Length: 254
Image (cartoon, rainbow, N blue to C red; front, side):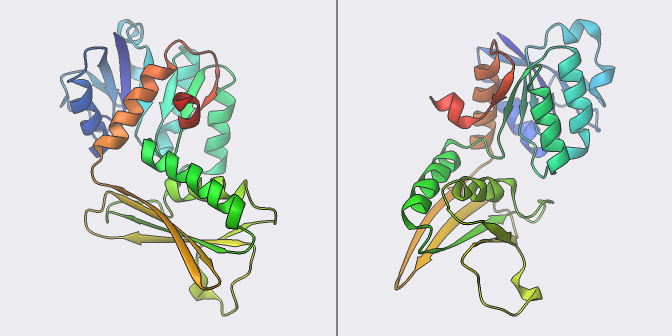
């Protein structure tokens, strides 16, 4: 049975993962990390990975992180020091933090994805195919919608979709986030990315390919956080026993 260290265990996603793992017969959460150390899930909770007891560390087979970007460096240091695989699901990471993940993956297996949904990753593949066929003749826009408590914008998933599309385009693509600040025509080498925040929207992503007299749309709608929890748990199981390296959803689906 795989022992999981869950970082961000008392947050919204952490509580969903705790509930899902409690129904599983092949993994268990042996400890959690959260600034709020209430033991809500029936396992010990620490305010920092550095404070975890040695006897508990021995029970950890894999780490799942749904915490905060500010906690990433300390978590990766703990993972590398103790040779623990890590599933990084926290969004809103900057370039320096992503480089930390890449550096850690040279020493331990790291699964990193801005979105743990199978459907979203399929959307990325479909958008790449569409971009390969249409990209040079169609304008591309991405619209993402999330609940009013989400801090980062645009979403990590929107950027993941844009990055996927970018690999299929010939020209030097730039991301345009804020058109109200300038008055000029849209250029051909841009992908527009727009963020909407409101209510309790779990997650909506739509890619628009706008051409001459026709529009093609590819979209994904998340109806609950459980699909992200399921993806993270499956990624954790997948990562156990893997050699050092950087893994993503496409590796798991092969």
